[in-house]
Length: 459
Image (tube, rainbow, N blue to C red; front, top):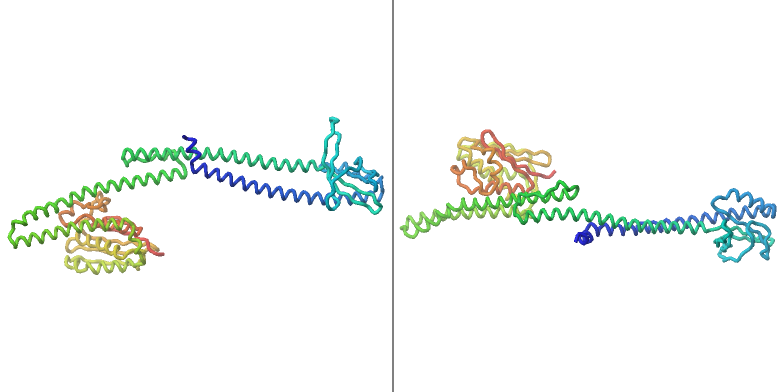
């Protein structure tokens, strides 16, 4: 089972392909080096033969047989790695001088090149068949000069190079397969551990559990971290769904009950009272529809599909429009408005959503600020980012309640008796700000509340 998983793993297949590609590349490099070495060797050998032939011919031409003997004696002491054989014969191939016993049969190639074989006596008195190659030259008097050397060392070198290349490839492939199997086994083991943890969490349904990442390093540690973050996000969403369900049941039960009771009484009422009750029922139904429309609007914003209509807009222009809309309401409550708008901030966003978000914030500031209070709207721009601050002198929010106000249907207890609402306004604001890749936080205005919205703009 384990072996099958290892062989079928991506790591093993990747390592196998990598080793195969590396072996092919090594083979091509070895062939190229072999060709270069061979070409260089034969060019060097050709020059060496020409040099030896010229020196041998000069010695024979100057001093005859004595010159040949002296030349051979001198070169024998100098030659350590390349031993040459020399021979001078007449037209009948009878030996005149040289350290080669006699003229032998040979194969003739172009440019006076030839090759032949000799049986040489070894130290153990046995004979060994040796391969020779050489070059001949015919003089004006008909005599023939021969310079030859044993090329068994050449064959040995070529064989050794081929042997090393093939052995190296075999060792590379074997080590690569073994290494790939080991790496694949380690990868399969770690993936199995993660899968077991995920399966255990799915089976138990306890999303508070987390995958142990203490034994993971590198990419696997990052993977487990992201999975744990995802589990945390899912846990938060599930908890949010439970809270939303409870809040919906709590907040809508009262208006629905009232709606039902009024409908029951409507049948027995006279015409005038019936019209009054009908008007109240219509308003109650409108409030319920408004709640569900707000929920749908938040869901659409959080889905991210609204980004398709993004374009460049100026936050300062939107704030001025919102302020203009709410100036009559602030004047009616004798609330003083202060504007501290910096230069414009151009962002990539949806004008209608941002207008709705800032309208909700300013509307909340007006609702919870008593008559004669103050509301301050500020825009500070720093480089490519801007911060919108909306502060009031109202009742404020306790520090323990601030992290909860962005949840759907959550309402601070102190505000329930002061203003009607469904607890979805700030949830929509948070969704719009998140859609525009911004941030939102609450701070004390001493007295009152300050809402800070951070948005990224164009540099």
